[in-house]
Image 1: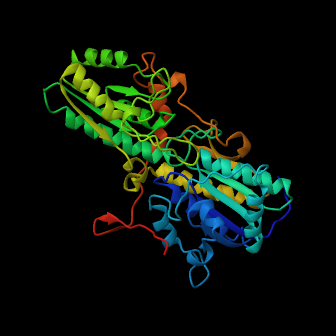
Image 2: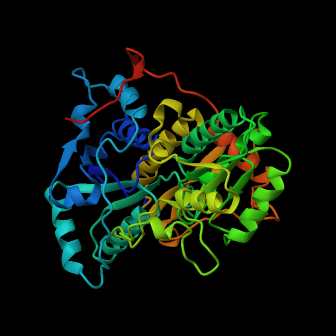
Image 3: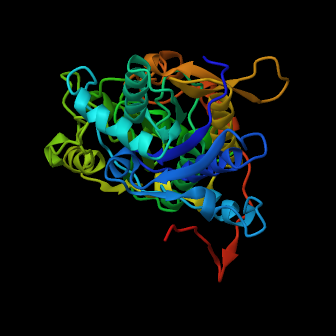
Length: 422
């Protein structure tokens, strides 16, 4: 960390899968970069179009111009619209940067682009793979003596980023999942005909989102009967046994299952229905787990079965965002700018629970991004029941504070208004 004042432009980008609050983090960066505290240090704020991929192609916009009013103040009305807008307003990408030691020419081209625009501050909003970009870039500029501060800002609905208690995006996704699954449970409860409804929820390797479906259990609501996470090997025999036990007590069963559940041999449960296509980081595109289980249950029990994929609404439901999540997302963005101006670099802004506070509260602290990039935070064993078919109340008490609060939305004709860059 250098305390020396560094004067120059800043650039911010968004990467990876969108969330309901990723633009709140962007708004936090903009607000802090245009603040009086940053004046004289950050001379201009640019936004990358489609992340680092767009930056390489020279596609970026002046956020300073867009979010400054004619009288020179920060345009809070535009920032309010940006904050309530889902998905990545600047666009996203899934580009894996090469190893700096194997392809230094690539990074030299990046440095040239930074120099062309006197960019001295780099902020990247993203998850595990995006922190890989932050780690590689910060390492390269340090080794090659280009004075630039590189900061990662956490984002992921999967909540699988290490080094932080939780990530912005998760709380809102968890809130929507808990509400939607509770509504599904109520809908399924009206009939006496034996039936199984299987709800597939996002989560490749970590089951945090699926765990959230059980939240109504401690909030006086209605939760799914069974919850299966990718942290545990999935067994068809055990699954059928769980269903038989519950069908003896009631006719209607709702199952929540992560898209990434696997058998003991590592094969995805839904692999037979998947394309096998992978992204730039080698991750398979997943879907079809609930569909496969539906066919298996139908063949085994002969009862009514349906599958439901919550799909994209899990990450774009900004109309039902958590105010806690929105606030923390924006504060993380502001904290990143303040840390960089103070001399921090090569870090991700971690959100940590304040254990000294009587009620739920958090603090924002820079963490070494080299220890975070490509890492993974899974649901711990203590949060999973002994039977491996549900989560514990302790798990739900961990999640519960993250979904609290409802924002007051700017509406037009009955639907929320969104901010769109020209």
